[in-house]
Length: 393
Image (cartoon, rainbow, N blue to C red; front, side, top):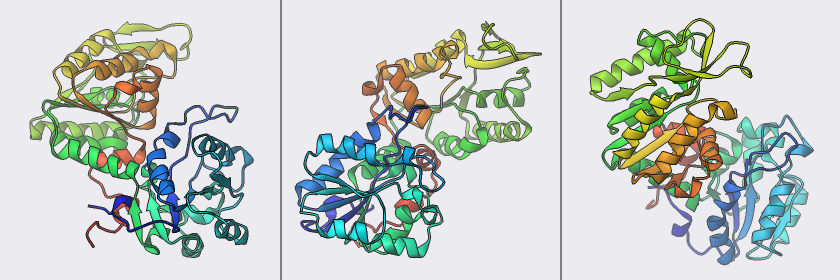
């Protein structure tokens, strides 16, 4: 068990380097569309502030190639100021004398948000010198950025090797919730997978299948499974590599004695005429492209969810970003939310769909990670977690 901030001795007056995940979604105009990742971080920040720590927050935003004012952390600082009035400052850099001077003048219980750490190429390179510079800013390292726990970057891994460290409340909750759900699930346990590529989720599917009772598959990846089963899917998204992975999954699930439920009908459109024609078809052929699960499949999935005591969902079940093809994803989101099952939803698109379906508050656990959630579901090690000291060492 990893050491939590609750296990730290007094943090009063200590400089805490808090790696958060403030990589917030933005629209095409650069406006922030969802602040969930900030509000999810508030308990950890508040705990440290109330105990007199000097909280130095580091995060990334987007995938900049050098400095990009459109991806500055300044708007995040403004959001933090609403929750901690009079306590938040912003540094226009991440390392250097200017940052050190600001930290030297911090009072106990104050917050300094650093600029976007990915403005520095050394971050993703996990450059030792850069990690050393970051470590020089603080006395203790706290990682609460679950969304990038699978990244071996300077701020998620390198710094942790140089300072006494711990995890924050968000990271602790993510690890405990997901691990417990897989190792000691409530039965019947239904796992739902969607999205595009089978190869991206094969480890998660097979790991969860060890404890799940049934696996439901939708989205673009379902077409690879249907091809592997000998069905035609027209021009729906699928390739030889994905079909080979689907065949592997199907063979292993069969060996485990697990049920795999695939779509039995689809909402489709004619290739090249997406805006003009949409209709429900049971068998795709010729120029048809599948874009959503059909009404029979929705009913099939809903019946499985109704009987479940635990549901884990990762990946949308269609092109939900297009209103013509969002019904399947939204209906399943609502069914999960209104079910009696303990529910976990992970993955950016799944979380976005749940929010758009207006049932986010009815989900028991919304995971803040994308790739990190998938790797944890797959039983894989995450560098940002592995590097943290054990609780009782």
